[in-house]
Every structure is written in C-alpha cells, then in structure tokens.
Image 1 (cartoon, protein in one colour):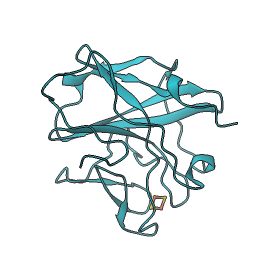
Image 2 (cartoon, protein in one colour):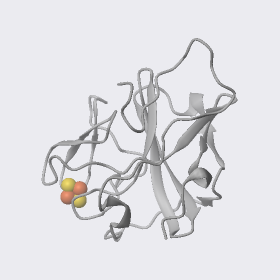
Image 3 (cartoon, helix red, strand yellow):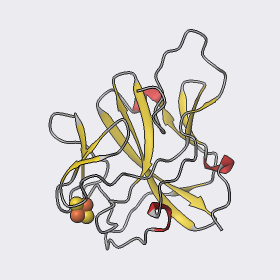
Length: 164
Ligand code: FES
C-alpha cells in the first residue's frame, strides 16, 4: 500500500533511525469533527512526542489506544498493526464522532481484518481507514502521525502544523 497516507511497510532494506510513518495529511472537514461520545477514557494523556508502546506490545492483528495532549485538547488515537503494516488514526468515528472502541482497545473485528466501530458497526479498511460498509461508507478515519524508533512506536504529532 505504498503511497497511502498513514501506511508504512517494514522491515525495510535500510531502516531509518527515526521515520515518521504518517504524514499529517488531512482529509476535508474531518479534522474539525466534534467529539460526540459520552464514553470516558481512563487513558492518561501523553505529551506530544511521547513513546507510546514497544512494537512487541502491539502484535500483528491488534490495536491499542492512547490519548495525546494537543493544542486543541486531548485527542484519543489508536495504533493498529496488520502484517507488515502499522499506522495510527484518531479514535473518532466519522459517522457521529464517537470513539470506535466502546471496550478499550477493542478496535478490530473478530477476524482481525478490519477496524470496526462499536457504536453502529461501521467497518473500515485498516491500511487507509476508508469505511467499507456502514452509515459512513466512503468516509475515512483521520490519520495520526506516529514514528518507529528503537523498537517502539512514538507519537509524532509534535511535527504537525498548528491547526489554528
Ligand atoms: S458512530 Fe460509528 S458507525 Fe455510527
């Protein structure tokens, strides 16, 4: 899936010491979506640029949520890994803005082939966040920049332009 925003194929022939996986590409309108969910998170907000997890802590076919402090407030994100692909998205469903995981870190369907929204069941392709079925079909999850460094996944939002 080379060229898809938010995607990284690894390992590479010559791994870089630090590589931003997800360029801060914005899709129209999605950035400003309000948070509509009532679910509260117990995730401790992390500073921009924080180490999120060891790569081993996000095994193939899994996803894990985090909260990042930003100039626009705390943003929930999740990192998802499938095969040789790893990327991250904001934890906001494009349908009505609720978090995708009603149960913490439960982002994927039973077969671990798609991201699924727990609220109304929309299904999203992992590698680009496009909604394949459900009430927001054709819409897209908002990518979030992360980096791989020293065997760990790091937030890379400090490199994002100020949305204001
Ligand atoms: S809020 Fe996600 S499908 Fe409705």
